Length: 307
Image 1: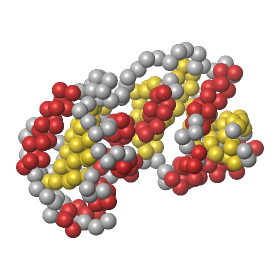
Image 2: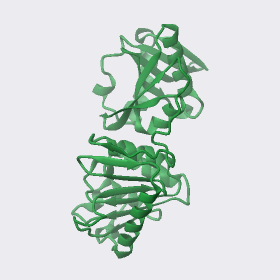
Image 3: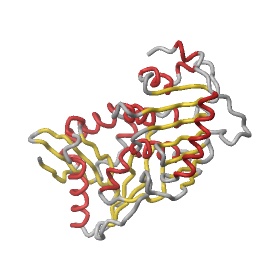
Image 4: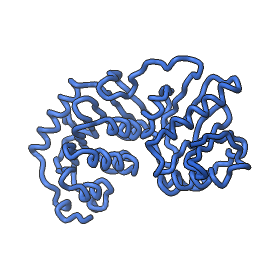
């Protein structure tokens, strides 16, 4: 295993190979976004297993770490940690004490355990929710429970459209038993984003004991083509979907999601709320969900859905 600081000119082919496979092929990032014109001026970090390039990252202007990528067959072997340590050591050697990054929501805890903390800003990048994080390299890692399921009791509120998708991915990664989803509007980005849907798939596949229950407000034309419904058909014994019409003035109206007995999200197109340790509020919402579930009906179109 070898980690090196390299320039774009000296290692372009290796860096391109890794990033094309990880970002363009796997994550379907558009080429014009991936090749953003910043590589020639950036500092690059390249990881090799023997003669094979397997991992990379870059540091751009203002000490921003990005394009952290590890080939699929080499994940889970510590390459991400090595890339981060190499970046930090390089900056400290050059008298820089702060490193920032825009982390994909699904990578939040990877950076969190390496001492990076949320900087209160979220954004979409290539249709993937990202969070701005940073670390002061010369100080001990600050204690934090931000976005930790069962520990973070803060009420998080945001008018940023990306917040609901980011919090959904972070919470669903930590849930261990059940996710209950009440949907007012199937067109909302959370229910259509490939990364959010992939989190539901991974949640179910990690244990036979896990379950997802989904209540939709009404059946709509073309329901069978909705990506969430198609995912349900592939996992029909583990993801249950029913329909229950909700009145706009009812206490339970809107988009709500509960993760285990800990976290509760509610959101629309204008704002989002999430608390990762809100047991009283979760119990109240789950009771309302169960009442609606008992009054719900099977989907008419859902019976004819196909894989």
